[in-house]
Amino acid sequence: MRSIPLLLTVLFLGFASATQAADEHRNVILFVVDDQGFQAGCYGNEVVKTPGIDKLAANGTRFTRAHCTTASCSASRSVLMTGLFNHATGHYGHAHGYNHFSTYESVPTLPVLLEEDGGYRTCSIGKYHLAPKYVYRFQDYRNDGVQGNRNSHRMAANALEWIDEGFDGEGDARKQTKPFFLYYCSSDPHRGGGPGGFANYNDDPDHYPGVESVKYEAKDVVVPPWLPDTPECRRELAEYYQAISRLDQGMVELLDGLEERGLWGNTMVIFLSDNGPPFPGAKTTLYEPGSNLPLIVRNPFEEKKGTTTDAVVTWADITPTILDFCQVEPKPRPAIRTRENDGALVTKGPKQPVTFHGKSFLDALDQEHAPDHQTGYLSHTFHEITMYYPVRGVVDGKYKYLFNVAHELEYPFASDLFRSPTWQSVLKSGDEYYGNRRIEDYLHRPRHELYDLSRDPWELDNLADDPEHVELLEKLQGKVKAWQKRTRDPWLLKWEYE
Image (cartoon, rainbow, N blue to C red):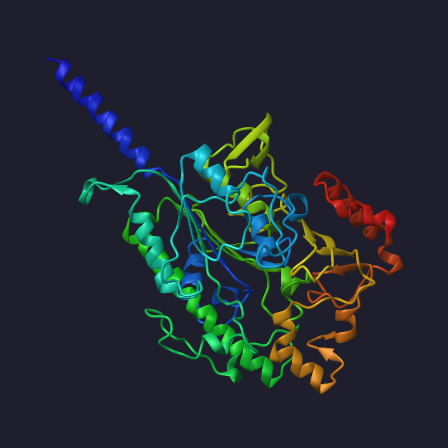
């Protein structure tokens, strides 16, 4: 008589175990926007409307000292997806067109590691901007109708449709079969083509079906100190805000979709920007407006919500953090991956452990002050191939040091930034200043720059030549050199040769 209850108990435990396993899938959405700084409500901007980003911040952790390592779209994304500085992977600048930078074939990437070692479904939606494609391989690409990666409604719909395909069963028996990793990348608020770059894809209210057009008045925008408060700049910022509100609608739909599908409790959502705003003084520079960027992380298993942390993290930390959350330990891999004449991908050589330059910051999500995360390294070499200007640096506590390797060159401009009405209006006016920085100082930089960010957040008072800071300067230079050696940076030689 006791055998029947025992059998029922075994069956129940087996069913419970299977249900628990399905419920414990750890999903990840990496939501990457293009050229956005701290223009969001949760970061103190009271004008721009960002309900989706703000909702994520209210349910997660908002970082105030997160940095991209290189302020260039394509190169920055290579760091995000490998956990390695781009000077070590060969992805020095843009992948597209005549720039033609790409990652070495032997480099393991996040989507491949999650698929092969974690059994994840993987999908890319929107801007890709990486090379070669077989190194950054996703199982699916869902870009039908996304209209230059700016129709956030269609992008979110494609994402939720793909997520739904990972379920089996109906009604209460509907279960997720595998965990998923979604790489969701808007091209907003990057400039479009044409002279101004923003208005030409903002003006038609019916251009993006399903997306509400949210417009702003130039008189209402917030002009940060590093930008000039001119009519041209205000008009561009108003158009820029419109692009931000457009991308935010995709965030709203994604978050609502997760809740409707019962995935809110097991899906990590990470929001960040590849580099700073598309204006001179930010994008392509490692000054704070170009590199200090929004990062919001919602860990569904973190008890504290709506918190802020001062952890100094970089985009080299994103891949290790996602793998840590997903509980995926990369397996050793052959050191050589290459293409045969028939196009087949083959691996050769002895297997080696997969290592990263970054480290997981999961432990910092509930820490307002994170003492174990107070140092981050920076490495920029190219944006477009015509823009050679290597900079290496470190943010260490309240200090920031930059080594301008090619300081004798005039600082180069991205083509779209040079054409911007904001920059052109300053040139035509003959003004000495662009925002709070002298144009001369922006174009011609010293070999070494050292700033106390706690009292000089806009990096205007260079302490590198101050006798009182000699010891600190040498200490940070030593850190940068040691890091360059650890990460096999070819530009380490420039300390000696130049």
